Length: 503
Length: 136
Image 1 (cartoon, rainbow over the protein chains, first blue to last red):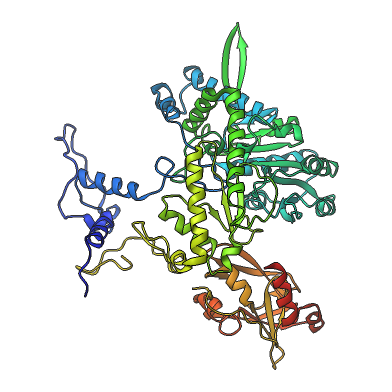
Image 2 (cartoon, each protein chain N blue to C red; image 1 turned 90 degrees about the horizontal axis):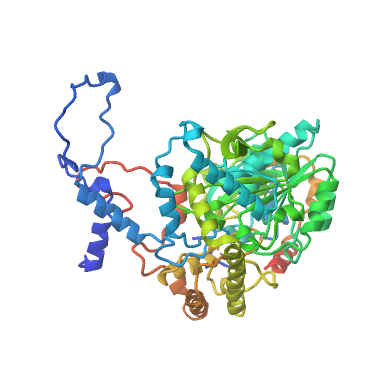
């Protein structure tokens, strides 16, 4: 048996789960004396004693979670070029706005006349998002990007049904799409047909033409695509779908590249969603809350989800109300969307103004192309053309040395960089999808480029270092296959004095 | 680990699809279907298989199930039309055998083919190797 190093001992100590830190009888808070009549406890059959809770002091809880947060990667601590997720810096002034007592203390059931400020903010945000997209109407109700997609395709279905064209059941989706697109379409009852991309990464027009039959409901496309490319055929694509009686859905995941430059409503899109947690700098994290507002052209206005905020002028005074559009697809959730997120996006838009939003897309596209230009000699570029806000590279060349995209991603952790998106889009072998965003300075981009160049050298000279990376993180290479095959998701009491299996 | 250190191999007695399945005709008139070395190598560690239960009617190059790896979920296609007579329980319970032994213990389904002429549409080992070389 070898003597553990201080680091080993420290890590074993620091990694203990909260349950493993529990001491019987320890109490984290002092409860004041009872000043109300004691109540009968619930009947015995409703009481369970098989739910062990950790018994720890407040200080131990704080230390536990603070340590975990320090082991984590986040926007506030690390460069985070996670392609398609637009991990831009979230300005703290957004948080100040959302914390204002008049917003933070609102109750969703309070009378509308007592929440006019909040409704005015929502109405203005609707208006701004229509302006950004060139659309006629907006509902802020959807609670996330894919939720917005579902709202969008449900509107397409409602539109066809309202015209007695319920037979339109086919939704066309490019093979580069986010997996949520076919999932949303299938959930709304559509049959999904995949459309290939051509050699340049655009929609394959002849395949699209062939697929535009009498049962066509619509076409869902991300612009720019998940390859980080602007589809040069987009206007023709929209016309082709419209001629066949279909509607065009725009996945707004990559709107960061188009802000203030292209209004997708003017290209012919009928409906789109926007990810406020991407384009408009509200936090991602912990799985939410997000917001995926939907914007529509004239044809889909009556079908918008409930509620939308309406503005009227009565006796020279603005009055805002929550309304249900005449043929609304209904509610996407309880109440009025993730309001706190809406406040943050509003604050962001107001802080930047129109010129600021235009600069966002300009700088995002510049950053993407800077990385492309400085890495294309060492990494394979599957679509050799100018990219938009993100660049998709392939680790094909490194793969020949036995180094996979996964190994490169893991090695980046040793440089203190969050890995890019890997193995997506699916049509690119060993894909590394890099989105720097506009909020990173040239110094950060240069540091990332240097790290990637160093890793490319390592792939040639010491590939085994990459295959076992990361080496400098609190936890080394995880056995992802075992984690998926034998998921161990629940803490269980240890036999007695034993060590938790798997550590 | 997903066969990284092993050499690709494509047994000459099998036929292959462009979707990276193989099929082997057995003497009793049934056929085994699996995925190729190239497929398991590209997928990485296989963690889950969704296979059609016995009795399912499959069509030539129709979707027959899914294979999930640590990277992605991919569709599986049936090389031949026919009826599923058996599913490889070992592969379902221990998907790592698909990586370890793709043409042996890692077979996926056994089917009773209904139209052996479909074999002519499949690739020989030589043709399949040329096909994936063009992709690589």
